[in-house]
Length: 151
Image (cartoon, rainbow, N blue to C red; front, side, top):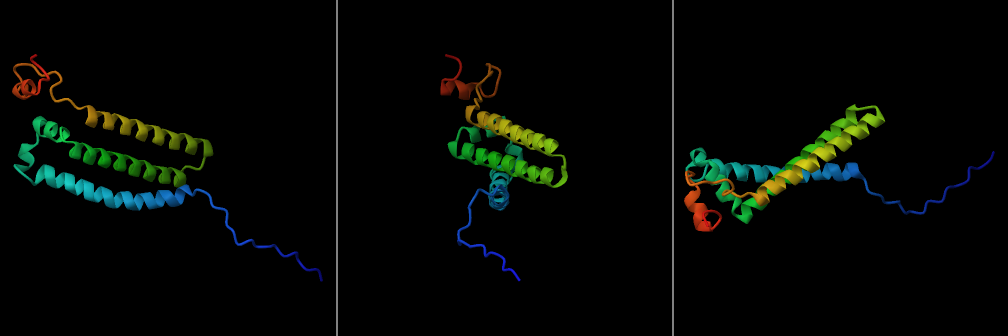
């Protein structure tokens, strides 16, 4: 009878980044934040003031003129896109068996989400309600008062 050599357990675990664990945690945290952001967005846009009847270009222009609402909408955009892309990544990992196709789809998801995040962020922070306004527009007086047009 021969004894198997005992493997010395050092008690130390190698720690490495676990993307699945962090993806799972992100989905839970971002889901809760998205519920708060979305219902806050809907409440302000649909319930306060004149409700849905007040939604027009001027209402959106007024919201995007306030940094608080810019950051609210950008945070909602970022979280929604990353949350959705992470969910799609999970579906691709579960159902796509070919490694090359899986890698291509995950890259495509990342690129699409990244492009939409960049474009959406640019729209929110560079929004100019006076761009293209002429004298027949209802925004003319506001844009002249701001010094954006009619100099």
